[in-house]
Length: 249
Image 1: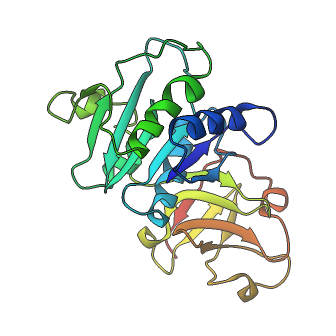
Image 2: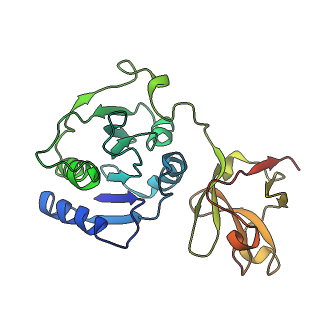
């Protein structure tokens, strides 16, 4: 299967154009829409979100990932990563840094070949989608393999990012705020603080009175902030990228 993870949104033609290429190049592969509202222009925030959700998918899945504010620039390289049996295709701007770090012996390739048609601003359609289709057909990645020995880790975008990110990385449609912190890395007695507001941990929404904010472990293992029968984003004045402070109880 090919899994789409982008910041394109569902408005406009972009997702449809990518799917048209995938259908043409790999017509037998199912295409799964995972996120099209990943943090726009924010590869760092998106990297932690992507890493939290890949475990739902089987080995061999191909993730076509586009959060690419540097599209078309010479500094940003296109890449393929293989980690825990899954493939990732997209910009080498840190988007795959956390997935690769949490994997055993990930492999990296620079995509060096360029198609005849390559828009300066839509590599998702013209470069990444054909490569993802090729992988879904069972072919090898195009380009030059570059594992740790061939490119030092300190030279890779995202190499200096923390293992867990104490910031807001995503809001779902209910106003719940996901953080880049894995709940398993936090102790039962720790509280989270946002905008000066301390938040105790709850197991589920009904453990808190209506209108009360709290933090909990969401279904993908992230520490998330919610308000029972309310919206955490509005009630707590939260914005994408806001810091989250971890305090011992």
